[in-house]
Image (cartoon, rainbow, N blue to C red; front, side, top):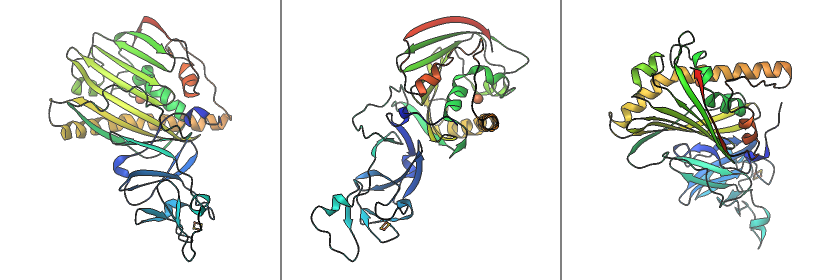
Length: 337
Ligand code: FES
Ligand SMILES: [Fe+2]
């Protein structure tokens, strides 16, 4: 299997929803690194999930007076990792740091808890439009750990041609298609595909739920953050921001934030409707990722061929690997979706 690239450590990766992190320690793995997350009055803290004393998982501990206590011998650690108590012993000067757990840089934004495994606390988040914009309704949707490769999940969400088949009848149809114009724009660390179509998609969900659409655009901010935006004559109708956090080489955790302009019904109703209707679509993609991985494992390694519809081509993989790509613009190309 292809090892996870170093780019995952030198980028912000979403580890949890804010609402998942409380006084009970939470165990998460990000890019192969086991972490423990917990919340104190000072905010969210993240430590490597291994007690420096005897390797016990700290996530099995509990919070005591704003510190995380290891269940094995009761050592206590602050959110910065400093060891503040070794039960039964006095701590001499300097021991607090020598016995420290390993802290991880963390940031909390708009309901998301993000980590930087390389410790670069001042690195900016990728440029995300509207995901936290006022005047909009927002909700988060995450469904735990998926079986599959994060790179394949990125390709899936950026690829419109699978929607006619895997989501046949729901989003688009395999037997009847509509003409579209596809174009691609890219910068050094992002790539975006834009679909313009005069007719709506022919799947029942699109016909039932979607307001008039001029274009949709899906953008990958390397290495792993995707924003899909649907725009109508009056502007944005839906924006979905997804953090595809690789857990291991063969599993991932997608965290999706849905943004809609206020109006068109209360936020909770839109959330219910979107979850209800998108659930089968998500299950189809989840199943596809798992089957792809089954076959990659059967053959021992992945292999890719770029077809005429794969406009983003190998650039998704390059961004995932932390490489820079050539800024530019291609298209429009006429296709049928
Ligand atoms: S292993 Fe954690 S306190 Fe000993
Ligand atoms: Fe899909």
